[in-house]
Length: 211
Image (cartoon, rainbow, N blue to C red; front, side):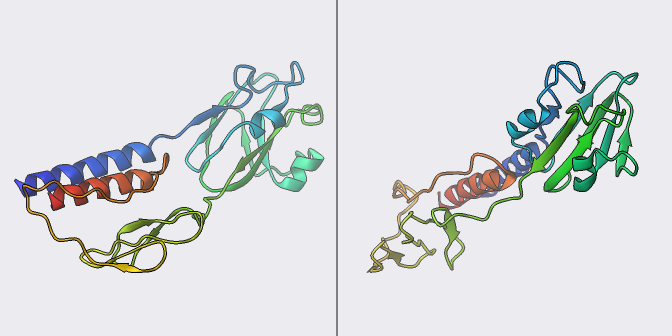
């Protein structure tokens, strides 16, 4: 019975991780306006309102009779230099996946269009390091909560718990299968990312094993 429960938890973990990794967001440049010079659309404002991540897709939709898409360097972007682009797209329905963090510069290569504002800087932020108030790992491998003040409440498996003031607390007596488990200290779960789902699955797995 215990083996069946463990297998079920492992399957759930794999499924949730796979679902999260495949949840790429498709951003259509210009939204309903698309990629055009009509109306002097503010592509800079459009890009600044988005939260681009690695794995997302940038979609350019336009009339191929009047527009195209060139990916260029920063210097070429600033000067609207169309001479040696990094890549050229001309299908009118170009899907460009984001494979790494950084800036990605695009503009229309039709003469005069870049100068009129048909250009966009896609900024993909890098993953941030955990903040002092985030979760940390205890020597025993269990996740512990890190309060904003910096004190940690470590819960090593089978060991003594440390209070925020640093004093050691004696381990609580083990409970039998018929006794309800004591409440544990928890920290906010990440709302996004495969690691957030992994943390949930590991927590569930630990509960099933203890049960």
